[in-house]
Image 1 (spheres, rainbow, N blue to C red):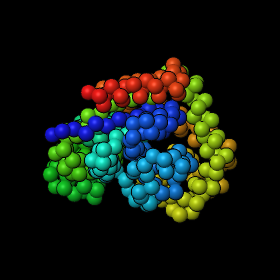
Image 2 (cartoon, one colour):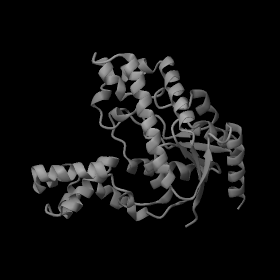
Image 3 (cartoon, rainbow, N blue to C red):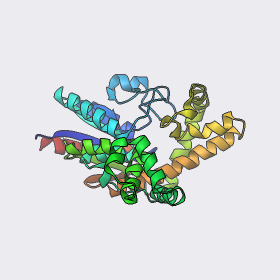
Length: 314
């Protein structure tokens, strides 16, 4: 099977992924596929740093504003939709450029790996084992039956390891083990990709950029944006309510804290998220790392453009 050439621009929050992807798309005649798990939601614009209307008018973007906040969006759905978009873009003679910071989504999309091949989450797994000890194997198996009946039918209640793994897959991705097994039939990568990873060795520089970005979001009307979504039921949603920059406002709207605490918490949570992003992306293979502390945005673009031009000449 002939594989589709794609470029993927990944990295930590506030590293400049969107700007680089836009410049590459303009230079190469490409279209951008968002690799951000929260930019799919309509109305979540400022807090997810969506491309502006002008940017989206100059370069076509995909997988943005495709779901309402009450819709559950999983890695399985992302892979299906991102593949469809990449096939369509390539078929029209354009270059698909995937840009975002949701590591699991982009890793599975590019590599074709099964979700069950990914590292398990120790904390979540521990909590599930603890629940089994307190409530019993049958109770945990009953929970699995609620979310993934097919897996429950295939796994004996006493096989606690498999029950826990099936639940771990569901709770960490929003997609059932059954669905992942279906996807695994397509586990060979359909992409021939160039992976550009924007990282930040200077933590203080990165944190300063994150803090400034949050301040800009707040001055651009983030509070009003979140309040509108909150009034529409954001806090009760399964997936959208987990977005950093949104969930921190919930106690504020309930009169339990002040706006300064909200701002400080968003900054802290974003910094912690950036650490997790680096941990994840550092494990990904076949990537070219470009350090925002070592290179200017212009140098990063020039190096990326050179890499992409060489790649597509082969």
